[in-house]
Image (cartoon, rainbow, N blue to C red; front, side, top):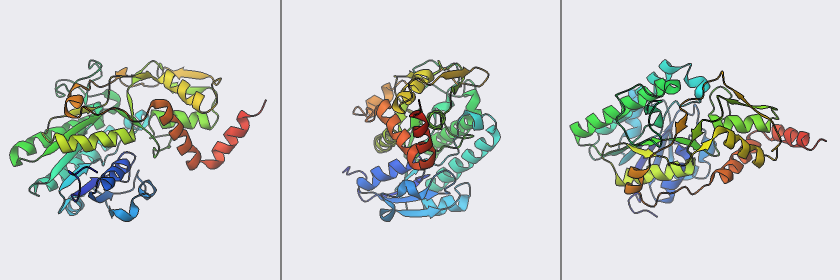
Length: 339
């Protein structure tokens, strides 16, 4: 158990979500007194089933300033994982909506926190703040010199705005603020909606429902660093504890895998290595390489290393799909046994 968290009152905004729920579990294990605030738009109470009786849950919309103030009141630490974050298909068509919703959440929560003297804050930013032509692996470069990642422009700008607000408030109020810039995450508890899901759940769904060929957006040669949601949660907890200096820290590593290689791993895990893969180059693929220079992260948290490898993680995601769509998985498995 980590003594820093024992007995601390901690709000996890977006704590019923994909990464937030893993963070809640870690904090409960460390002895924190956890409150979760979530509108359950993308998160679910099922994600909190292992700790539901050990936490306080507030259902509400953090885009409303009154709810943000209510949720933040009396907390020692506020960790903001609440966000509207979707895959490329949705994101590139809804820049304004995503910018507005995320900006409201960020502005409301940080303003509420700064009214509470001594409350520490975690801002979860994003690798989408970086421009498309950023060097890879990408260090924590200044982000207002060029446009953010184009396919996620609205999201990237909302996170840039949040970082700027955090730095202003840290200087103005002396607030203790940690900022992390996560790269690409995966794991169970992901969403499967075709219009909003990210690349890994999208590919797993295509394979498990029997698509042949499995279509990849873009060239397939685009490369990503992937971290399991549990590893993201662990990193967020450690950076909040050790580096509340309003200075962004990448949460990701240098190693990458191409989307074609990723698809091959998923096909192997699903027992369908012979399935055809087709790349649709008319579709956007985002930045060609997204990987993090982890120098600063390792200086702050030298023990940080992935606890979940990619192939094991894909097995977990496939198992998650089978739990979410048991009938679909059975049909797919039966079809795979046909001569």
